[in-house]
Every structure is written in structure tokens, then in C-alpha cells.
Amino acid sequence: MGYLVDTDILIDISKGNNQAIKFLDSLTEIKISVISAMELIVGARNKKEITAIEDFLSSYERLHVSEEISVKALELIKQHSLSEGLSIPDAFIGATALNKDLILTTKNVKHFRVIKEVKIKEPIY
Image (cartoon, rainbow, N blue to C red; front, side):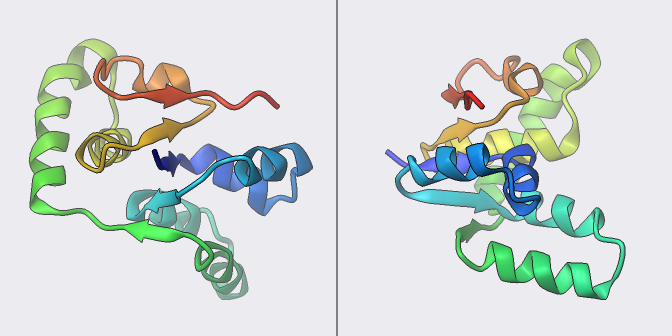
């Protein structure tokens, strides 16, 4: 089974965190959401950093938002945004994991715990 890597882990890897890199190397079929790519780019301070982020992300298969993912993300927002504070990016990332039958790996388990159907693997580092 494949893995959808959340933004927080990608940030750790981009900063050279050796434990995060080792964790990622232990996974098979690594994929990232286009939402995570956008979150990383939004954090860039200049065009040079954007280029570095794009180079870094080119190593991974990027999953784009489809109609099915959008419909599921909207459903998740309606169910969980008011009561549990589910954010739009996390709804899309969770919906992507569900749609593609991937295990979501994240250190932010609390962000996704409200989506009961999502399989989560929390890294230990």
C-alpha cells in the first residue's frame, strides 16, 4: 500500500532533518498532494526558494485534486469544520488519501483524527 506524505514531514525533509529523511526512505510508493506542494510554496520567501521547493518535490508523484476528491473534501468540511475545526487544506489532503486508498503519514494526527476513515501512520522521530 502507498503513502500520502503530509506537509509537515515534507517541511522537515526540506530542512535536512535526517530522522525525517530516514523515515521517508522506509516508506514505499510515496505520493504527495498538490495541496501540500502549494503549502510549501506559500511558505517560500523568494523565487529561489520556490525553485528549490519545486526541485525537491519533483522526486515524488504529485496527486492532483479531482472532482471526486473535491466532493469528498466538501463533505468532510460540512461534517467537521464547525465541530472539530477541520481546515480546507487538511480536508483536501484527507480526501485524497481516502480517494486513492493511501495511508496518510503525518505528525499532525490531531488534524486528521476527525476523519475516521483515513488510515494514519505517525512517524516516530
